[in-house]
Image (cartoon, rainbow, N blue to C red; front, side, top):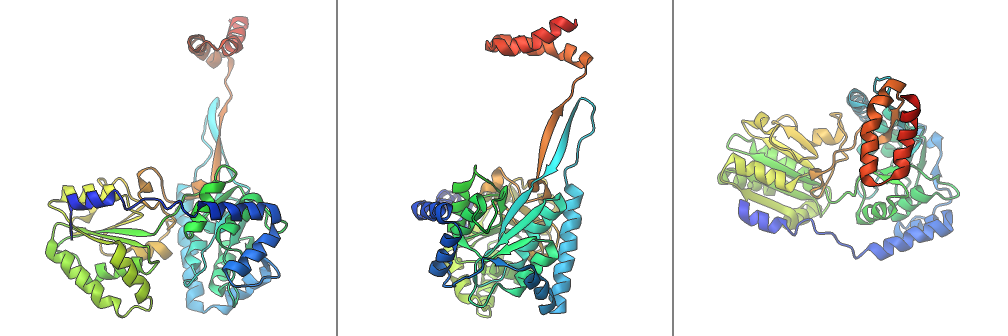
Length: 416
């Protein structure tokens, strides 16, 4: 159990970055730049233990995957698709009105989506990224996902088809990020890469940024849950278990002024843990990255929440609505008992691609607007120019940029 102050002292070390893998990731990127498809196939054999003849999965396989999954799963994905599309359409940037000063909005031409492989087929990642790009009007959406011995999971392929993905490649890891950033004989270079991944993927995205756009540098997934005496301990315990089952590095923070409730919920966590198929993953996550934090007041609770700046913040208190305006650093805020983080992972509508590791202090979750770029347009008429020019001339004069001054003054003098 941590007090607010002891947790603040501990928190200083929680988000430290491991740079030891930088050189190995740089070697992979340079190899892909040099040897392209050949390097990708070699790394698939080395890292994924899969020998690949063709990197691209044919469109017919995506269509076949939709019919191979059960009807309930297909309907669930279609419902999620519709909810995501509806939500993102409501916040999409549009051209601004104006005759002399306005903006035009343009979709990116080609986007790459990284979908992790591993033990869980993250079909939701496809929906939570590709649908946004589709709503934005991106010309071409490409997915890369690690190869599997038995082939890419049909649920991922079905999600690609439902989301409107154009091409799918069975390539994973840092090598996939390099391929998307620089292109190979088979995989085209994209304008932006989005989607979560392991430490190697995150570091590769960091290293290629500038040559290509990225959404963020994703760290371990995390949730902050605020509770009080009214909280349903069983429900809150499953929210902790749900977060911890992502990965052994997943982080869970339980915050309350009520010590008895903290202990009750953690007792429920231990009880529920034994029934989970991913028990070993959860157990390691909880052992190393779970924090029970006892605060003295609601103000102190909110202070801790804003300090953590968590990817997911769940408020399960009797005054949950009062937190909305005061929690200012959260990737996504889940208010009340009936808005569990898991509903946001799958089907609510906002994207589950969110800032981690405290980066919610200065960044946002993925939206349709991340797939759009804007041009500011200045189209002044003579009268407006004549009004603005003297101020510009004076500032250019002060900065001693004479050609800037002359550019304005020559027009102003000739027109007055």
